[in-house]
Image (cartoon, rainbow, N blue to C red; front, side, top):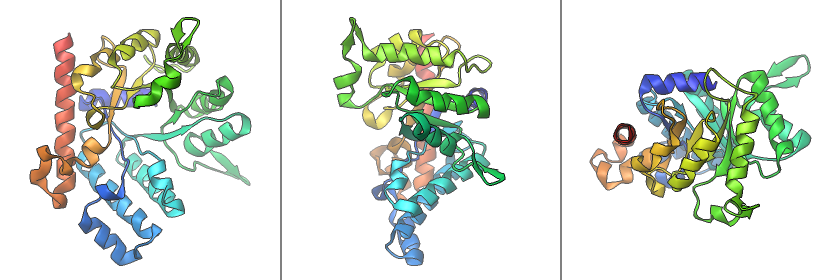
Length: 309
């Protein structure tokens, strides 16, 4: 799957992943009203509004981007109806030939970790039949429990040719409370990065590993170090836009081949119509605002990479 992701990045010239992390206050009133008219102000109504919101954004951006990243918590909060909306979103994005990164941040051990892996990127047996429950192409994984928590995911990746993005240095302000702690004189995130590179050596695509890393755009100097530690790992970079990251901050996440990283923007794209820059589109044309935001982001990153050559 890493080879498909790279192929689509080359085709679109946009190393961008759109974070499909819908909050109800992002969803325009006309979509909510229509969903509530059909299902009432219920969990089902919220899930329908989310699905219709996602679908319109995907319809307006799929030709510009290689991938999407639905964050499962934004769907789980609406219970089973929310998970159905998550599944419909994943299926629809795959129909549009987008690479789907399930942002699930799972991390457990033994059979529990194996069950998470099977449910999201693998298959499960039911009697004589086999099913692919959620069917994402990549998932995010928390490595805090060590190899025991990651290996079941790696095993499924090898079987299914799927991929992982393992949390190494996250973009949130308090990430340093643990991730920056020194161990034998080195920050923990560097040691995790070395482990990611080690895990990835046995899961190589044509030029990059199926085992990637999450490194926040808000820490560009750390990204520069981690790029060297993990030369064959693709880096998923959150924190662009709404969290403060800009194209100029991202250049060191990429390798000399112009590849090696994919940058996430969530509310900066899906709620672009709420920003002053895109206010002229209005609520009715929210997805057109999202398309414009994708184009602007792609240009920002491309310009920064060209300046760095």
